[in-house]
Length: 538
Image (cartoon, rainbow, N blue to C red; front, side):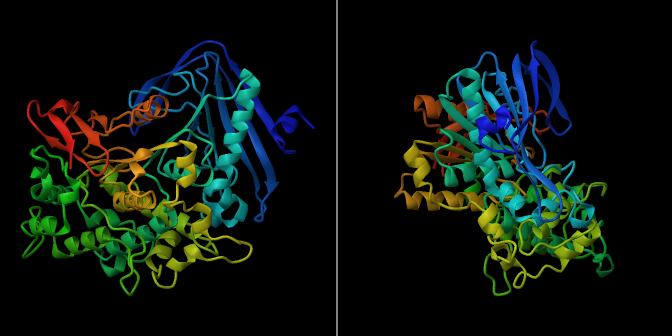
């Protein structure tokens, strides 16, 4: 038995590589789509290893692989970097914490990332939904959902203690999207692992959200001629032009922009932005005759309304959540998920990622789909009475449901609270994948569970205009991790995050406080571009 086997207690445990980085380095890393920044890489030891290597039911070889960086100038703390999408990528174990490219490794943290138990380079199978073929293996599905998380966290802490001669003083997790689901999962299932968690745009109801993606596809496809309902739905991008979405955004602003005390192109008081107000404003730009560039059609309004009302069963029972009218709807970050790029070159993520995952990972038994056309047709024929319940089904060899394996939407965080953990949940109002309304409803449930004490250990920060994990017309640059550390180590509970708008926004450099739910940033007086001119109020 190798030394790694003995230390980690796993007969298959292997250290694949251990590399010494003796000199500080500056690397160019992507920090946002189309935007890179210099990343400081301090002197450190880099370890890549694997655990629980095995043969899966579908003949694939699986293992949980992890990537650990141990800095020479260690600050005594541990940072777990969350994954994203369907995972299957090892991650760089840098621990990005700022829009400027700052990272946890550079701050002195020992950092780990992981692939959640499958490898996109070797486990993908085009005949079984491509990169999500792991969904056909029950253990791989569970590892993706939650079981690999504790395994990697404990392994990293063991190696850290062996390397430095002491355990971490504080442990943190930071992730968004699937990474947000992982953060909530740690708080729910493994509450003693972390002192602080940032779980942004949490996909804690991933199977339900995937059902909603099929709902979206069907409703947008209803705008296409019947002759285009077959095949890969490559024409979905034509259902709304950029000009159409501009008209919708203008209607949303016309209905709701002023409610926070300032007309500034942002909907600060998202809670007052009701369906009735927006639909009334939209009626002013709805075509009464032929479609022109100056109006949207009644059927376009109907499709959007059905999408934002949320997925329903035939009897009208909600299958996921409704959505806020997205003030970030005119940006690429929203339409890319729903209907694809404006030029049609990039298909909707709702189809290529949402549809394949729904079929392979989030329903039981899984359904094999060989190409984009098959995925699109699976969604088009998805029956919300017959098929939606399959996210809760079991069928051998799947002895637990997809909801059990991947879902973590529970208000019972009593063990995490007892541990003294702190949880920060930023979420974009215009997120097209996971509904902010669902996250706020979950917080309200946590608050009820704790008799009005939820804010003592968990806070949600809605970000007006922000899409999924960033993007949109928003002040989407903020330091949630710094706020978390101050809360955990100094007891300074954050009332707001300091947000700035990036270079891709309509207002580069604009500042706004991002207020903890249920308060909103209200304009008081002074410079309209400065955060100091606003206060968080009910």
